[in-house]
Image 1 (tube, one colour):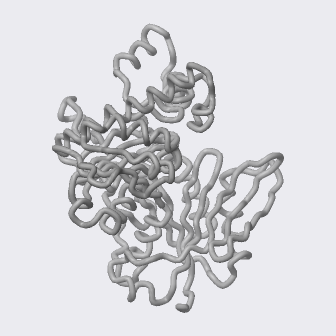
Image 2: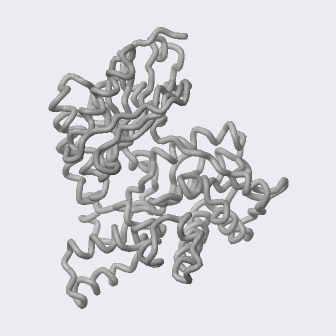
Image 3: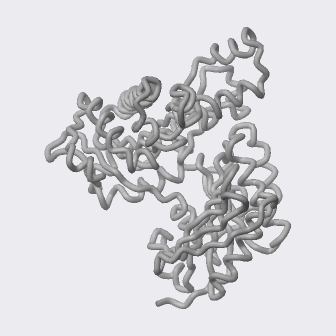
Length: 413
């Protein structure tokens, strides 16, 4: 085994939890991997979250599967979770001193088309983008700020969910609004880019180079859901837009909606801007339509008519967007399911594939029930796949490149 030179902590901060992965960085990693895409060594993966009467830090050791856990008293500030986590990791892995912290940052705006080392200027720019990702951006920035104050010499890296979509053509990224607004940044960005980038890196080995470079649609289906059309492994169309609110119906988010409906809520129903925002982000989607739950497994197990209607709408919207993305590609060679629902909900995949028969998808029910990886019959004109995503590994790969001695530390991206 290579000598250990340190570790990289990958953080994904949310409103009620702090998910993390700790990766080992070996001394010869940079020399061996060349382009940085070689295998990474996971030490542990877990989360910090409120549980019962306190806060629990849990992780699973990647080597032996042992559960590592520590309970903290209630009443602490979530802003301190990154600091508590660093101290805990230092105790659990004393032979892996932390070399850097890398963060999933949802919105990088028009400027950041690649991961960057964070400095004061980067942080200010990312704060400016908070209104475009109000559910996600503030929590990532809070974690970054906490670590900056407590560990000012620790390098921190931002990896953006929007960066993968910087290849979108102008006709895909533009709204039909006055050009001056587009020039100010009011445009389509797309999200879940780290997930799509990871899946794109897996496609050649699974699908073969010809299909992987062809017309591929990836469906990232989970509490947040979106789809992306790839051509030659690059994003050319996607369902999310200026914000992660657009596109598919999601767990609690409405997805695509007539702008006039928003005006109606403001002007006729008299809702405040804050109330409309709360409705669209927190009270819509599967939860809003069903009135029961935002969880797909709960809805599929329910006999309530409203639960069935919510699931039906979810599947229908995926089919509509699939048709749109296939049109943007000029056809379909492969469909990939990923994300929590995409990887585990066989009935949802079955229904989507059956609805995509017109695109040449011929689903194999047994393979789909077994979760693939290939879930179409031999000879299917367009193949369908189930591929588990790993955004943290993608972040680690980017971090390894940036941490090389010869890597540029220019934060301009």
